[in-house]
Length: 126
Image (cartoon, rainbow, N blue to C red; front, side):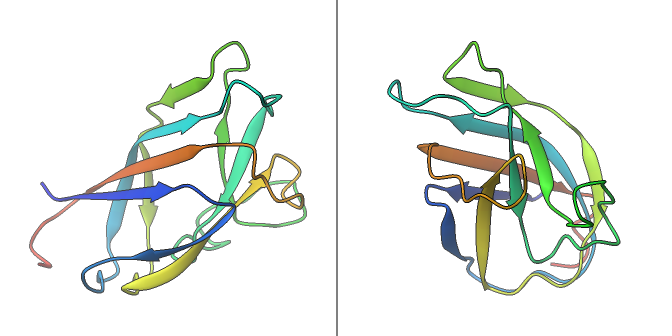
């Protein structure tokens, strides 16, 4: 089954893929975030991805549609396996991913790397 891996190293980062991805179900299988030793750790980070909309994520933080990744404040690297299924919209070959602190407003630049691994529910669309 195909995999979509997003590697984010800046608070606002342009992601370039080698082609558009048609709207389909994606499963967020794994998320990893790493912080340098010199940084105080937030309790979570919020990630804005344009292909996950407010119709996919509902929360009480001002109605935003951010993907929230909890952070293990005892470790510099947190790895989680959420297995969340999203019915995504079309994913363009280039888009901007943004990372915020858990308030969903303050830009988060404290991390050194964030990676998201999505599994496609089907490969027939390729």
